[in-house]
Amino acid sequence: MRKVRVRFAPSPTGPLHMGGVRTALYNYLFAKKHGGDFLLRIEDTDQGRFVPGAEQYIIEALKWCGIEPNEGVGYGGDCAPYRQSERKPMYKPYAEKLIAAGWAYYAFDTSEDLDNIRKQAELAKMPNWQYNSISRMTMKNSLTLPVDEVEKRLAAGDPYVIRFKMPRNEEVRFQDLIRGWVVFSTNELDDKVLFKSDGMPTYHLANVVDDMTMNISHVIRGEEWLPSAPLHVLLYKAFEWEAPLFAHLPLILKPDGNGKLSKRDGDRLGFPVFPLEWKDPETGAISSGYREKGYFPKAFINMLLLLGWAPGNNQEIFTEQEMIDAFTIERIGKSGSKFDPDKTRWFNQQYLRATPHHELAQMLQPLLKEKGIDVSLEYTENVVGLMMERAVFVEDMLEGMYLFQGPTEFDAEAVSKKWKVGESAVIIQKWADAMNALEDFSFESIDHRFKEFLQEENLGMGAVMPLFRLLLTGTLTGPAAAQVASVIGKEEVMKRVAFGIEKLG
Image 1 (tube, helix red, strand yellow):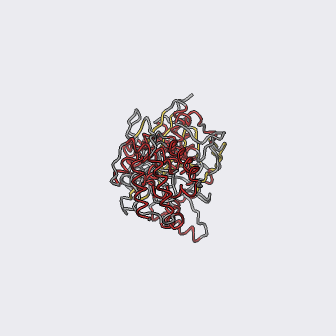
Image 2: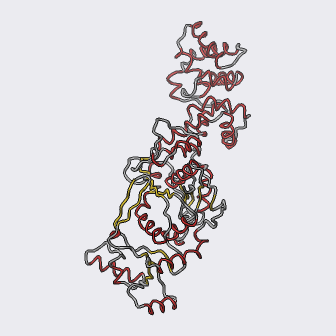
Image 3: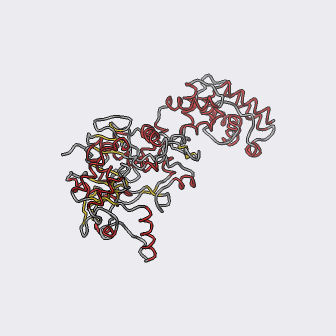
């Protein structure tokens, strides 16, 4: 049995879409599950679409997600180089080998020639013209031109491409690990360009040559590459190489399920589609990222895991090892999965709640310092314990700023509803005196004394608690007032009650 070797092979044409991250994740988990290798290869043969900074973005995004290759660009390995532009010299001999074996040919048609033929085809109401097994015999190529003319053109440095000679009236069959048997008719396929006279291969040739020379055992990629698969299968046949096993992943769909998820959907509906923030080097436009939005990388990955794969039970939260142990290609669905931004927030909330208080406090401290608040890590831990159940992101805990500084203003609507001049001040002062007498100022002690106070004064909770919360926080919403009091301490509570009584009258 071949050793499992898989690769993630993005093109550096812009930021890495979350669909690409999912592809990398599934490759990573499959390799880990089977004790194999996970490679990162950068496919930059299309230099016209190269975007500065995109390659580094891809590497940084994978690191943030915890999907690190054990071989590839930035990591090294026995199959280096892993950047296709650096492998350029090796491709031409493979293309020439295909020509010698009758699987490919030189084509000298110019761009103008091809444009004219397409226009003529449109006029003849044949809009889907292809350079294929029929039309190639009317074109300028080494199949129609005399041998000496072909040699002269090559010697003179005339521009050319090398095209694959697609067989006619054949079926290409291969078993996809997700979709089962897939069948294509070669009559529906065109003669793809494999190599250009500038010395650069196209994706198709470079992809197959690299996968073979890097001993790739399984090709796990998005379903947008499924139409290319028959050509790749035929290339393996032409080279007499053992083909890898293929698995074409379903799309990630818009939240309404109508089409592939795009950046525009995120912009329109207010969620990121990229793992990290991206600044377009040409326009300066900034696209949001999950990291900058405050998502935990493990929550982001956990969400992606379940966008297309199902564990077969009701488990939703996975550690990395649980992902590795449970993951199988057989449980990847054939149809697309709708992205749910609300569910993504839920995943982050679950990971936040599972994070130890001291770690959350360490994350919160820099945010507090940005607001000019300097408190001890121990105090911040107490705040975290109080606020984390209501938070989705770490920065949400800043909504409890009243835990760091007393209110200077009070919610006007709350005051008009709850504060009765004269009467409220008397009640709240009595309750403050009762608290001030407590030696133990824990939540349990305050809560117990509050219940006693209500009985002693023959008052309902609604007559005291809203007033107490209002003076402590400036609003009627938030955690239990007794919890707030226990965190900020007796001295601060007394100070806020006194200020509130004086302010409200």
